Each structure stands twice: as structure tokens, then as C-alpha cells.
Image (tube, rainbow, N blue to C red; front, top):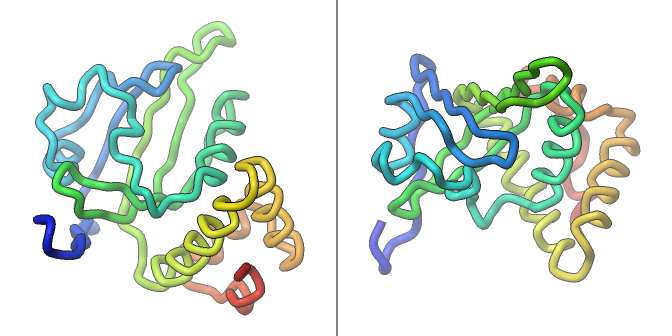
Length: 179
């Protein structure tokens, strides 16, 4: 991407296996070849950097707050993430984040990513844009509460939300969350 063009989506193929590991503070300690290639960074540029080097500005902070609230307690979870490449382009993934424990203490996190279907991308683009708009005038905590309430109004747990979008099933009218 150059300064005069819009970011383009980098395709994550069904055969791509994107894997990374971080220490408990989120600093990258491992990146497989696929991760390096898709991110556009060299392995040297990635190692020792916060995983958030890939954070796309189109990602609501509330989603990461929820993710961290779960993995810090030792729970694994799935999350839908839009990442940013070194060049400013983007790619969507369904991430599975696993805390690795030793004697009850988190030693590291491993994240496995796979492609995200187009249906989920469409729903998430609108949903995340609405959450970002909400975050302009509210705290991250309030945005997370808003998201949890959004799920509750649809009788969905977070896991139901992940499952329905993965299976390309409708959540309900996305307009309900617009601010």
C-alpha cells in the first residue's frame, strides 16, 4: 500500500497455518513462516515486539479487552481479528489463543489462526465499526459492556457468537448496534 491507495485485503488461504507465541506480557517469542510472510515483517522485526504491532485501527479495543480478560485467567478462546500488515494492508483471521501453563502459572500464549469466511467479515466490519464509533465517546469498559449487552439481547454467549459467524448463520439485524 502507498499513501495514495486504500489498504487491500491479504488473502489467508485455507491451507495457511498461522502460528505465533508470546510471553505472558504479549511480546512475540515465535512466529512461523506463514505468519512472517502474511504480516510483511521479517522474523527479526517481529521477535521481541508486542503482538499488537499487528493491531489494525479498525479493531475495537473492547474485543481485545475481552480476549485478555479470558486468557489472563488461563482460559482458551476464539476471536475474530482484523490485523494490519507492515505495509498497512490487512487480513482477517479466526484466532484460537491458548495459554500454556506450568504449575498453575501462564508461561506463554500460543495463537493459531485460520481464514475467516466472507459472511463473518461482512458482519464484523459493520459491528466493529459500530463499536469503534461507540469507543469515541465511551470508555473501553463501557464499549465491552455494550458488546456483551448486544450479545445478551440476542440470547447469545460469546461462544455462540463465534460459532454462528463461523457457521455463517445470521445473528439478527446488525443495525441494532449502530450508535
